[in-house]
Structure formats: C-alpha cells, structure tokens
Image 1 (cartoon, rainbow, N blue to C red):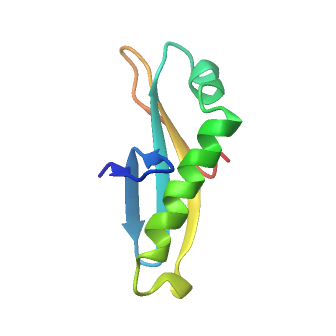
Image 2 (cartoon, rainbow, N blue to C red):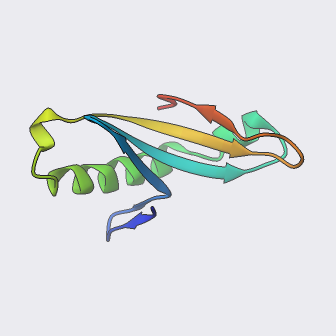
Length: 85
C-alpha cells in the first residue's frame, strides 16, 4: 500500500508479524542507478513517513522495521535490496 503524509511517502509498507518493511520502488535500467535514485533527502522523507506510520500503530513498541529498495528493470525480475538504508 502507498502511504502519504505531509512530510513524505512510502511506496509499500509490508508487515509480517512484528517486522515492518518500508519499501521504495524504482524503475531503472540498472540496479545501481535505481539505488542512486534514492537520495539522502528521499531517504529522510521515507523515514519521516515511516515514523509517522509507526507512531499510529497500537503495538508500536513491539515493532522493528527496516527500509528496503526494489529496483524494477526491463525484462528482468525485480531486485529486492533489504535494509538498503
């Protein structure tokens, strides 16, 4: 699901048990250019949106989270980079 706030947005929020993954999705020809497209300022906006989402969860104290990047390339399977930043 996409989650938007005034401070930023997250493309996908996925939760399994007490682990939450905030995922940024980039469509690029190369993996490195997809990773480079998530700049420090973009990371900050994603983290702020993630913090906002976490703060609204009733079990927030029990949750752990990470920030992932998925790079989608033409004619290839998506590449999932866990804990990318």
